[in-house]
Length: 393
Image (tube, rainbow, N blue to C red):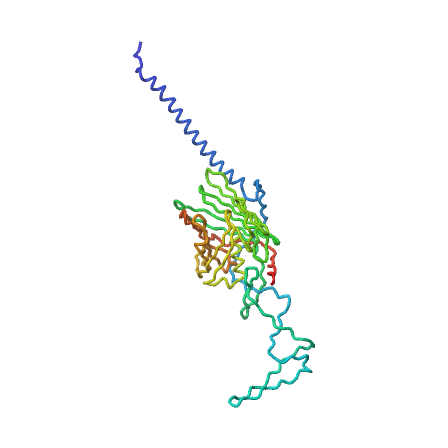
């Protein structure tokens, strides 16, 4: 008989093999969990697109084809729509007269001894038709955002234009930021319009960190954009999709938590505010000067706020398609709370006052992000939609 094996060899082998197999099973299970988790996140992103069949019946996207690049040009010189009643001529103080034939000759006052006599009175042209002369019309500056001064008189040699809504536009941005470490991503902003309906669709995300989609759906009006519904979705790894909806009525706004609040004239949502600011600059060019302020009521998912932007000055940005002159708008920090996001904006007058850089910041977390236009904006061949005449007093 040959020598017997070591007495401890067989039990050790039996102990080693099951342990190795158990570790392999645990490792395989962990891989499956990770793969399923990533697959689950991908499924959520694919299936929860706003306006593409979600359970909340968000508005479907307007189908628009973007066919041309927006090239820089001088901002248009705009004029207000013609008034319904032409202004009356300026009338000097003269004695009442029924007609030129019956008008009495004005009698000058006798001169004072120490002063030279006054010059003879100036004969004024009288209306051709008989009748009383209408009183002059007095102009009153607008006192609210409803009555908008469209523009100042056009300079010599410049043909004024009537404002029309810009064509549907797509802007693509490069995203860089910092949240417990640097990150990069991309963003797309689409301004879509058809007749008097509009949509602003925004998607911004960084790989393996977050994706957020925003949709503003509403109508064009005399106060700019009038939102009817705002939808927001946020995806993050290993988290369920978070959805929030704000509904706008003529008298009441329903926030995302169901809280009703009174409607405010000219109120915007987080997506529509970008286009509303562009509209304000186009229709109120006096705002596009350093030292001016722009006020904007804003319906956030949890509250209704009032934001103020200071126009701080001009700045040239070196963008991928060339140096671009911009107008910088800075939000007042007292507008919001520490957990809300502030937005600093650089508008390009030569690109229809579109935002070419946007900087976000949250004071509470210290997080920040910056969007910079990565290429020239793309536009569609939309039929111009003229602006409606602002309501009169």
